[in-house]
Image (cartoon, rainbow, N blue to C red; front, side, top):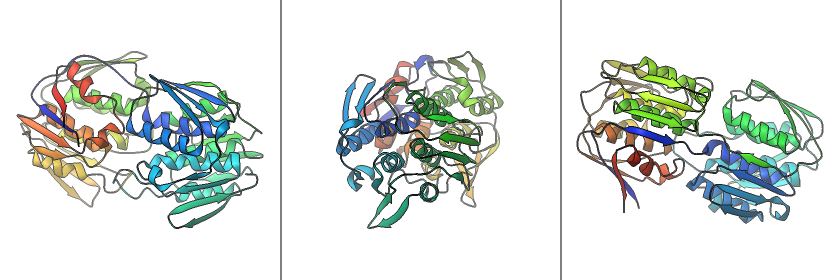
Length: 417
């Protein structure tokens, strides 16, 4: 398997371009199942998760043609309603095909999903919502099966905001008869992007970006062109890396408004940050100030930035507290940071106390999930000596050519076999 090798101690300087958002691309690709025709999606990032969901759609019978960053999907040839285990196990987002399949074909059979080891992340709210829309749900032999001759609009209140749950039910409701209201819905920018795309297909979705989303069902959706929004988590990762190395980096092709919570925390940590409509300029400072964070649903501090921020806090002055309130078991990266000389202790399983050290030391480490891999890259960039990161296939799920982008900023980083 590939590894990433880093010789730390270099400040990052220059410009970096942000890729399309993985977390926006996956539901947009899944939404093409709703269309008996062609959907053209541009700014598609080159990631393992994109490869996985394309393979899943092809297995269902959809036509997929990928040219550079443009993906054309023809849903008119879909003839299969079963998403098999071997295709679903690699990525939890595969559950997003459940709602579109049952909405268009009246029947779906989807393997219970796999993915990163960062907690249970149950799909019960997806299933409860589909039942409210009139589907009959059964779970047997590791598969979810949903049946409904015609989904019908309903009022659904989530126990807590769920991004994939909101996306799945929003897609399903577009072809339901009548009006569906989703309460306590997730508010992430990726939800707004999906709503805009569905409306371009002929749906009637209002309220995306708020806690109440209303969907008026329509008889059919139609093909359209969709452009994927920039990846806010990749943006935040480069922001934190610039601050951690005391660098000077201009991040281009991003949406600062989508990541204000991270910007605010980095400013509190001492970084100088200037934004335009589509750029963020980050200048790191010395010393880095310790800052407490608590992960929250959007627009709060994103759980997907927690690991990267922890890496920053390991070399800050003073002590910080990081409270992970979204997922259990999302501090696995802390043990790897300890190998590099960090001073971290965990209490109650979801609170990390980080006491800054003068420097980290390069060491062999292992990525446990997508964002943990990014935190180890940041730690390697600031550490003294050589860091080798194993299991970087996690990183390849969500970061496009990350080692090449960091190399262009002056980092001594390469991929090795």
